[in-house]
Length: 285
Ligand code: PAF
Picture 1: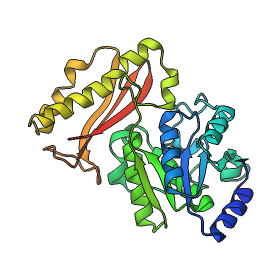
Picture 2 (picture 1 turned 90 degrees about the horizontal axis):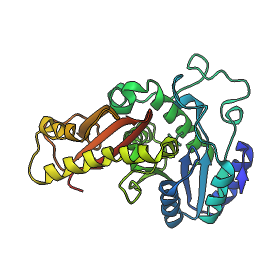
Picture 3 (picture 1 turned 180 degrees about the horizontal axis):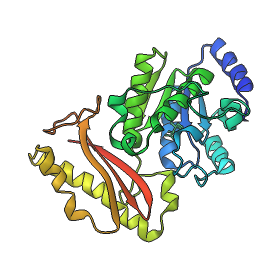
Picture 4 (picture 1 turned 135 degrees about the vertical axis):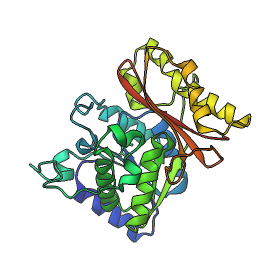
């Protein structure tokens, strides 16, 4: 069932809750791919009813980012959701989510701002305000759907840590479930932004998973010095790769590591053909 209206969703949720049904939410921005489908499958296994939200959230995009050209494929997304047994596809307009005519600025709108320590690094360093926009919309979705479980992909690992922190700090009564990264056979992590890449670009984009796998291999061989592990990336890079960051941090707190250990996650962001791609790996995996 495709719903665009908060009131209608709430009515349906109320009915399910009164029958004691467990509700799972998969928040998305649409352009669904196998990574999203894996979240829906997990939600289906865990919950009695599954809601997928499809909303390209304007307030998590910076002024020079790809909000306007972000792929919007609602018809295909709805069909995929139906095939996965999703009960509600919630696809609101920006007016429905934020109020008609609402100026989307933090002068006029209540924002949820996650702590500086979590956002002044990795993607947050260049995407100023991004995680404020993410947390704001995610908390709104949690308030509208009131799910028992919410499902997020590991590919956006910083996002999951920050959303967990918000849920914990603000006592939001639900459980966050993180699902593993889904990859093409080549190793490329699935992303809605892969649609922007040419065939050649997709090959060049393999540099991200190759760098991560190699660091993991070096770690398994006993190298733990973070500078030494980072150095190993350079032999993979060419002028086709514009690396934004490569960091080794604690998987729960995002604290920078000097020595890698079993609690370390390696995260990378790199532009290929101007497309910003991210990927990560847990060391020892
Ligand atoms: O990961 C995403 O697609 C988005 O950041 C999310 C969680 C749906 C919020 O807009």
